[in-house]
Length: 82
Image 1 (tube, rainbow, N blue to C red):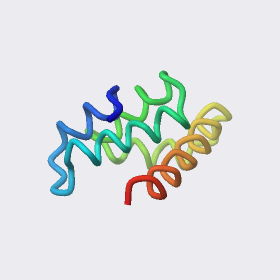
Image 2: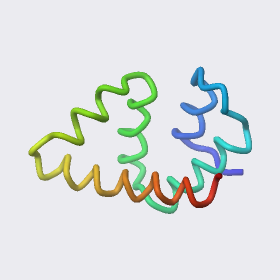
Image 3: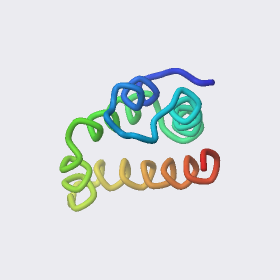
């Protein structure tokens, strides 16, 4: 089971489906897809889901690059963890 910022945010969340196994799997997907700074940025989405929407709709090149990596992470986590 992987540990890191995504795992910690997942475990601390109020989502009903959270578990050590699921959060560890999600962290493993993040480790395979996102850099450390991207992971720390993604952690903010747990406390502020609107932030994800703002980044997704941003015209910033760096936000677009981050969102592309974040989407790839989500797809990988879905494949590995469900």
